[in-house]
Length: 400
Image (cartoon, rainbow, N blue to C red):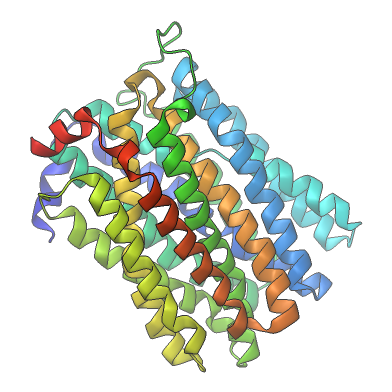
């Protein structure tokens, strides 16, 4: 599986932006769990913790398309630098408000700024790959590599922040997230040689969301994001219910591990079926993998079930980003990919809120039914509108 990835890093400048982008987006897997652990520890309520986490996710979802459009117009560096400093300052304010036991609304306010100032660094890394690679086959492998990198982050991030919050101090996980976000993003912005050119005056002034296929993917990723958000908070509660709260990060790492393995395999293959059918089949596998979660009664069996539940994640995300890359004009690529990040963010917010409410009311084991319902909804939407993804451009590129 590793062979096809070796040829990606011969292009000058690639290693630099890959490493910096990897470090800069590690906090994306730490923020949600870090906020949940901090707020639940101080308030004793998973519902409040889920709501604060949801506010951060909603703010990111609202701001991501705008920051993507600004990046397309003014360039990555000019947008990233001020935003990452604002993001870090807001996260410091959130930690201080929590420490001072300030009114709950201050947690919501600071969490909103944290999310609004966060950037979709993964979209910008993928935009750089699209800029430096002309071969569609290599671009497929590059997008697969980035998905695997994302999953590696989600393997390490939750376990890391949980270990810091439960083993060292409840604040330390978020402090480390600040350092990684600011340091990695500034390093990424400093690498100007591979930065896609800004397009000040472009012919395509409409938003990519007006493209039917992109709109469909946004709806599918909204449901998929709800799965992610609900599994995060429900799994933390499941571990605590079984007397092993410190294992929550490892349980979430099981999901990401399954996704990382499938992503490596998926990216190493040259597919004969088109992207449209790959997306629908991946969503179907997602449903099958999530079904056993409602039946698990202890932490070890849940870890195994979560690993298999994660197998469909990377192929689904890779396919979605690949479809956007082919449907959206190059001058709007960052904004187009940011719409997928936006829908995932909204979905995570919905899932975190619903997962917290359902966990408080019915217990963690029963609350696992919510991500399964969301996955079924994603399949239904994908099947109903899959014809919008069958375009001559996509078909031609797949044949090549």
